[in-house]
Length: 149
Image (cartoon, rainbow, N blue to C red; front, side):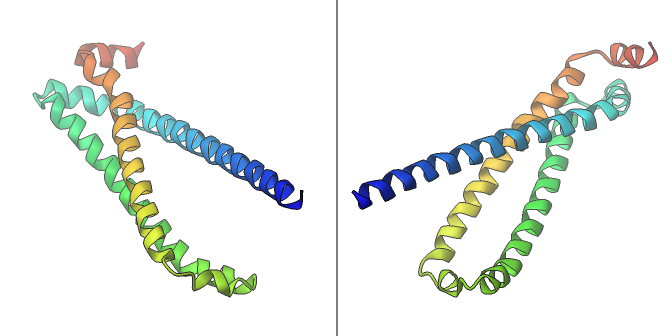
């Protein structure tokens, strides 16, 4: 019976952790999408002028994607650096030295980091497409007249 109680408790903890992870991912995607939309809205004059000067819409899309990806990769690298430099100190202060020396933890961390980086890159691509699409669809005159009125 004790085993069953511990097993049920562990399963509930796993479900709660999965729920918190899902809520965090959805919130992060929403916030990132809204920030990208605000960023593109601030740049709609630039987009309209560049289109009227003859720049291809594909080039503007690629520029926005590259800018978003560069920002994401820089922030991912900095956060990874801080995590691996501060995590051993946190574990040491909590008395969890045993967790620091777990075999295979670096391999799991590398695979997890690659999954997070890949997922983040896919989300940045998708959110950038969604945020810039309305401005690439319109004529430059429509965009500029929207801003005046």
